[in-house]
Length: 377
Ligand SMILES: *Cc1c(COP(=O)(O)O)cnc(C)c1O
Image (cartoon, rainbow, N blue to C red; front, top):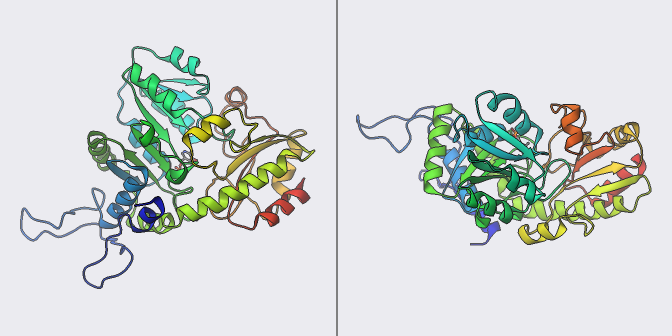
């Protein structure tokens, strides 16, 4: 089946009693047994739930994996995946990894004995040089946040294979509609379903999709043991949102491209970061591994911090808010918002300046969005 068909039909459990067309919500925390050894396949909702199962089947089909754990947030998905590792294990991570991931790795998991190297993952030699005998994982996030650097997934998989490490890819920014890392040799995909998969800014959720049966069953075990699973209601909302993923991504990325082109020629803009522009340094890599360029872009204003902050404040249609991937356009100032938990030094090392603004393009008419940016600039 084609991708859009899998979005609509994947994991839809038709109820037997009333023949509802959509999957019912089963909020029940527990399920009764008919005798001491027999239940319906579910016993307790932390461990498994029919509504959550429907979402997990859908996301497994979209990413092309062997199994999925739907979690209570993107961070709980990342935490779940990191629970595969033990003290002493070394993990290579992009220097401009998502701020919350950076905080979890640098301030929490490193205290528990995991060892991290933060490198520029567009520099393949730097990644190969960072490998040690303890390297167990290459963590990939592409395109990166907020500078939209594109990491060559196939090249990272090759380096990981050569040292016996696994690869995990945070695929939040593109969604499986535009990029399917498991098909490129990656072992696990994580998502913040809060973003494009749900798409309506009304759920915080996440998922871990595994390529192999072995990883899928270990991740399911960890998700239950650590208590990371999402609620049935949240699973139902994401399952509802995902049905329109294909058409949302198409419309939102078409607008993002037009906005990137508008900004690129504007005299008050110094630089636009969008992989769809041919001037983007990894445009060719993006073309080779993505089927579109996504709906997130960032730009540097031709001026200092006050001009960047002014653009964020003066736009009217773009809500000034953290997050991406919803149907409403958002604008944000990474220095004080999404990347505030990084130290100024870490931000500078990652190239996140005080002139930088990030936006996520929604479903409004693109001409209205461009007019809004024009007046704010
Ligand atoms: C939002 C986000 C996360 C964290 O997800 P939450 O749902 O907020 O916990 C992780 N990675 C990326 C790339 C994100 O954008």
